[in-house]
Length: 65
Length: 409
Image (cartoon, rainbow over all chains, first blue to last red; front, top):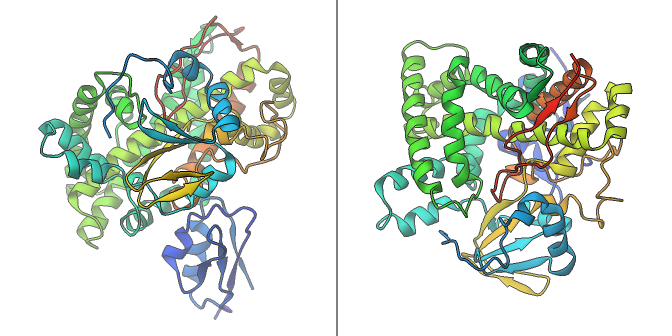
């Protein structure tokens, strides 16, 4: 069983497309009206982690342990 | 929303001077009148980086400018034009949330950086084949022979459109572009768009039927599946999304490649830097997007009143956000009029910002990078063969009609 992961969002790269919020609003939120940020919660579903990482049009999201 | 051309040339955003050098024209507005009311087009023109970036993120600047127009004018509008606007009103670029969110989620997977990276070899192979076709001729029009067919073949393959049909959809796309990109001085733009859209829709409906009966691994099949299995989009939205992907999938990238090659031809020192260090190409594409990108302006419709620099933009007003001016704003970029392939700054607004950030940006970046790297590598002596340049006279997009070059064989 893999350990739950979290996601981290690089605010310098984020362009605020909010695709990640559309996918998992329970894990991502708008930080400052411009960029998105992780809520920092562990994500049990590895497919959801992958989907969030892949969803970003500028590759600003990465999975972290 | 329809603006009849007037004879007075003052404030003509599509006059010869503004079309040839939008950076001088809109740059002057940016410095002197950053929230400018243009009487000729009865629109606001916003040109400073901070204001354009903020507007992209502000939901009061609505992308849904077709729906309200269709609603207000449908009684008086000719049937063909109504049908054309009806298709456009289902394009996700003209939608606000929640419809925009739903439609974008259905198609974004095909365009993510990871999905696009998997296409790298295929894109390079298509680019090589295109160069092969003219490499021995000593001259070429790089728009016709390279910048147009490369992204057109790629998006056609992604959708499941036979490559041999690309000349058909080039004609339909050309017909549509006057309306979509704001060719407002062309009195025939409505007629041409009606004809182009009708033929494009008829063609795509045939393909949709084909892939409904015999599914294959392509974007049309994915959209059909989303319609049939998950009821996530309507039949009209399937057709509209196909027209958007086919049109949007090549028009802007053609201009990215064309404008980029022109910038390199006109800045030989920067071209030499790239030829000596091809690893700079990815960054050079970002600089091209900033310096002379394909998105000159973006239209929005005010959903609420907003006060900006002491001007009140009223609900219902049309606004042009001008990335071309914002990307040369000295408040944001040092020496903004200098083309520098090593600038290393991708904060330009060439793909927009916020929820409407260009869906196809990763693909456009990949195609632009491969196209420029391969062309400079294979035809190192490339030189411009035109005394004057012929730009498309449209407001929202920036692209060349032709890019004649000569080269040693």
